[in-house]
Image (cartoon, rainbow, N blue to C red; front, side, top):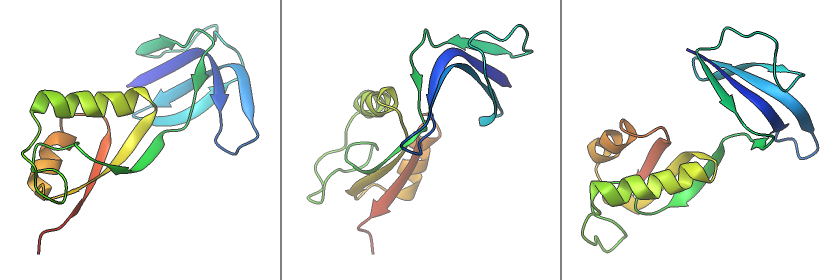
Length: 131
């Protein structure tokens, strides 16, 4: 699948560069081109997202998050969150630009983490307290 994010300003992530009024072309989840115009004359994209002049930023990594799985949470093994609450927590992170998160609750099993990760676009990783 090919996606074009048009009419955007790209923060490159080097701390210095902002590419203004451009388009980002993505194929199979990978950025393949940044076009130096806000609305390319023609692009065979399957999906076009108009960023309305807003920012496109690199995916952020949150390396310490609680409450991202349906297993027991916190080091004291509090009761699991509902699927709806876990989705809300993940959606909140995604809306803030997070594309990878490390769940640090410690008690969910790898199967529980993989189950949640297969149902949400955030790349979910975990730590564990199991022995």
